[in-house]
Image (cartoon, rainbow, N blue to C red; front, side):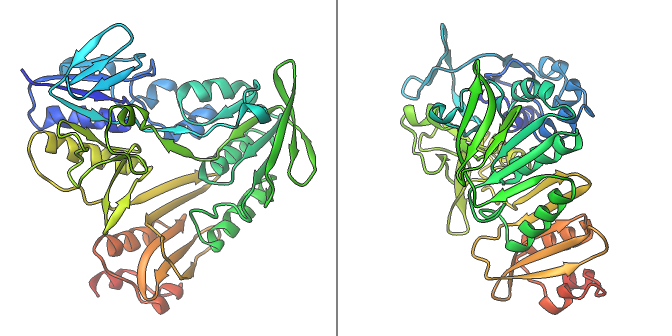
Length: 403
């Protein structure tokens, strides 16, 4: 009987094994995860879960009974030591597991601060796993002082939750503005104003020189402009790296993650990859997407292709971020934009439309689901939108879909 093994029990891994069964695969399935918890959602960790608005059980993607009922062997709390593609074996600490096909859904790892500048002090946290959040949660209390390092979406979401819990928050971003790597000046300005309105001290163009501590616990921070802060805890949000070490050690091709073809197959014909860890062909180049929608969609296509479907994965990128009472929805990729059109709304409702010339590339929509849905449909179908219509808040966007 054919055995399919999956390494990585996050959103992509859980989606892949479920799709295998739904697609009629009746062989053996083993899902291996390094964490002890059942496969769970990550986005609520730093929002509803950290705020105390969501119970741990609600994070789980499926109940434990689902895996038993579908004859899926769960190996949780299990770290893979190596993969041997020649022998088609996975080496655990004290066991070898043979496979016929293997899927890598290993996700990504957070970037940590170096120990040389105090990154190993107690009270310095990253936002990635259930264990990370459980370790951070006791510190997030009213009156505490927090330093957030990094002004990307991870850092801003952490700042929002801390501020809502009554924490005094300072956020430092070494680039000249928050969100510089991923968004236009307009989006940066919007979220800077939002956070400042909630009392967050945002310092741009300023880096962290080092953290200071007493008794192994962080107590302060020295910044690149010479200023000093007293802090009770630190949240590090300086990006993530694809978890591709196992694949690289096994000799698979690496290109900003585990390189796959359009079907999701790696340089080894028996090994596949999906989710944050995988880079794949996209619009004449290669891309790696860090998002829940990509993890689900790509994993499900890979599951079908492991069974011989031969379907290329056509990504339609979209993302979201929740901060305070603002829901940001992003459609498309803004790479290469040279002009931005603002569509103003009432209150906190607005959207920024990214163009390359007259071609619509992407949209950032704040509390504006209608603008988001219209833009997403246009982008997914390779259409653009008349800038004058977009810029006119009185104009109906729906006719753009019929153009």
